Image (cartoon, rainbow, N blue to C red):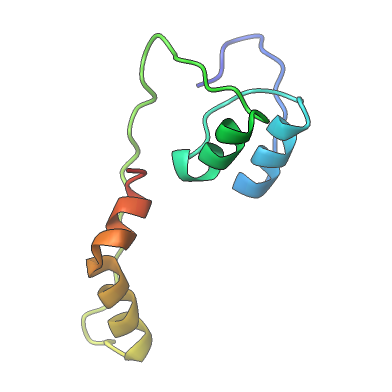
Length: 90
């Protein structure tokens, strides 16, 4: 989503991106679940864009021969509607 010739600030993750935007150092896309409380408090301003940011595909894979307790726990969490809503940004 960068424009040619535009100055950029690079951060290492969502927490740093949020902190930079809260400090007034730039603008950009944030997950609604991260931005919403700051929009409600007035610390961030939500702006409409001319075009929607393209959805990103995320893939998760594992070896079928390795179904330990952690994988079972993870799959149970993914099956929960609350987790699905949060991951899909709804």
